[in-house]
Image (cartoon, rainbow over all chains, first blue to last red; front, side, top):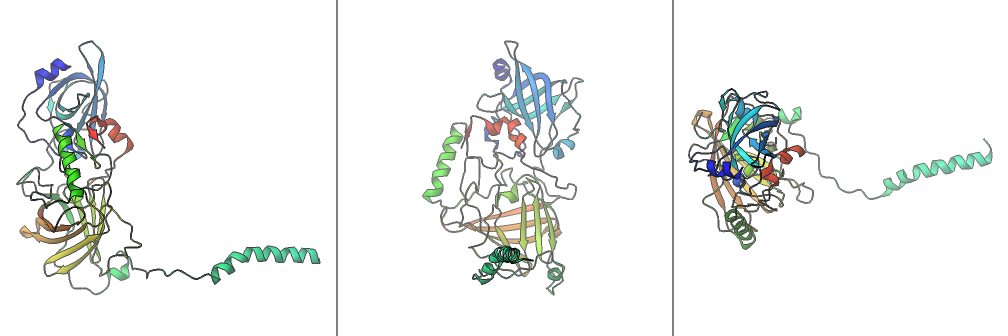
Length: 129
Length: 269
């Protein structure tokens, strides 16, 4: 996993959606982690949706990663549904990891087994109606 | 009924009535006069000048100039030592990649003023006697009373994170005066700028409807002598959101269990 982290670390230069109910300071927005694994749980819930994904590490052990996403309101507008993924699905999730090194990240993108890629819709960043 | 039975009956009756008689003889505490509810038809029907505008709608902080528009600074006021100690600690934590006292993340209410600028819409319903506000963020409720009532006696008011808001009209402006805040787990900012909000926090909002009713402007004047000197001023704009309703949003026990960021080792409590 460290290898994946190192290989995936890059400067993003994008405005991340600031919709968390908590301080976003836990995440290192300059790094990305690419998680290739199996969905354990996808929870469609306010204020945050989350994906738990089991990812094999270099020793072949499965590590449970938690990835948090924005609320369903904004995911719906980006094409998500409550059944977009389910337990057992093979997925690739990209996220910005927490600074502590714990297996957790905030969502950037999801690639489904059929190759479709999903993102979040930023929560009304800017613009008058 | 024989004598013994009559005596027993009288004794039971005396015991039963005893507390009632005692209560009637005790001096009564003075209760405050009843305030007619803002939702009472008799209150709503009272003769009042027509409101200059109606805030009914969903409103979302305007971030067109900055994604940081949810903050009420810069500029920030000169902080007291009691507040500066928290800012210093939060900046130190940020440098160390940690998060200082993120109470909102731990499910404490954001409270005023931050509740107004969370990244969820605020639903507002205005009637002649009040404006009911419900945030899409944790469904935090705020009521601005417009029925002429005064602030509640400080000795009986229940302090809250959104405080007690009393409004009145000055021309085309709604002026809202809010006091009686909770002074613990309540912050004016977060993310490296942990400025506390105390019990002496006093917020005056001057609210106008602008841009043909598409925007709400709120000019904030905030004082809290325990935490900063003078007036902290900030003006925010909110955009009308017509294509979205707020939803039920709660900070449930299983939420943070699944959000490692809120239980991470990076948290400084």
